[in-house]
Image (cartoon, rainbow over all chains, first blue to last red):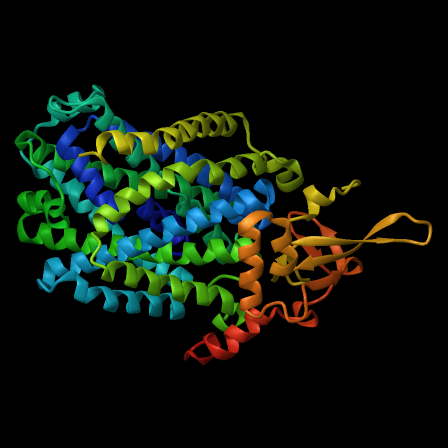
Length: 409
Length: 123
């Protein structure tokens, strides 16, 4: 059983990258507007995050040093501090958005405004992060998030436009009525969300929490190569059902309820219920991931004791940052800012700081002083370098594209 | 490791105690001059007061100011004599346990006034 559950850290991490609240809506929206013409971005994102999560996981298994340790060591204090501030803000605002996402999922069931649920959700999240063991959290929400597989089932139950979908996926150009700027804006935000920095912060810190050593290298790779493709596959399924249902109608997707609609059309009430359960699990899982990551990066930058493997009183500064971050997330949402739009903007800003996180990973993964014989092979370096170029290009293009397109409007 | 470069192998590296528990970062190093006039590595300095001055400009001033306000620098940075360093690897490992070193005041303050008061903090 333990072997069977060994990949839940990878799944939970991937949920934050591919099916958190921002992605649920972004994938559906791009399916509605572009069909599957942007599906290649998800595939690219899965390959990129697999390559870098594997490097970060390897560094942890051999040296026990999580990613933000490397960031400060290799970029120096000043640049690392800039990265810390940017990454913390992105992670914090994403945490706020996820709390909103959980509350929106509950609103779908109860019809009580999500704003009333936000403080409740925030409190429950904090209690879970305070009391429940890391492995338990990871298993419950990693596995529960997999019920989103209902969208894969829905895809096969919907009356078939299979050939259309293939055609869209194989012709990666803007669909009629859309232009290249918008197309690239969507591509950059989907790519940035697949590689959001908190994924590697969380994955590598989770490896430390689970006390990985050289013997856990195979387990780490199972996490990477099962978890991320599964997460990416779920996002692809969301995009495909949306391409099937909304694209022919020229309909826009703007709310969580609309994202669930294809499951309801294909599988009735049960499909809808499972979809909403999946939204709840995925957004709550992503809230845990971002909440912990916010505290991980601060503690790791300053060298404080951190982690859920310690008693809270032995890591008082870490738990204070965690508590304050959850509170700030609640406060941010109570300003009635739209949680879905919030993540969309966050993705663009996170694209800008991505290179500051991924460069140090690539450098250290090549350092024999750290990894001995476990340094990158040729394949890992080739993929790593190519993706670093793509990441830098996306970082440079993100803000101009946002301005030119009016954020994808 | 035969040669040790202060800026590459020491500065900004994680310090852990003999059991692998986090102590802090090497925020700054202290050099001494021996009898023959040759410089040697005297101590590692840990804490925002040691770190702040390394960051020039407003960001550094903000950090040092914040540290002062958060009452973390009553007694200056934590000074770890270099004799206590057992090994410099992916982390700087000490030969003593963390409990023998002075605990940062921010940690003790937060434990006493906030975290330690929440039920379940010792589990």
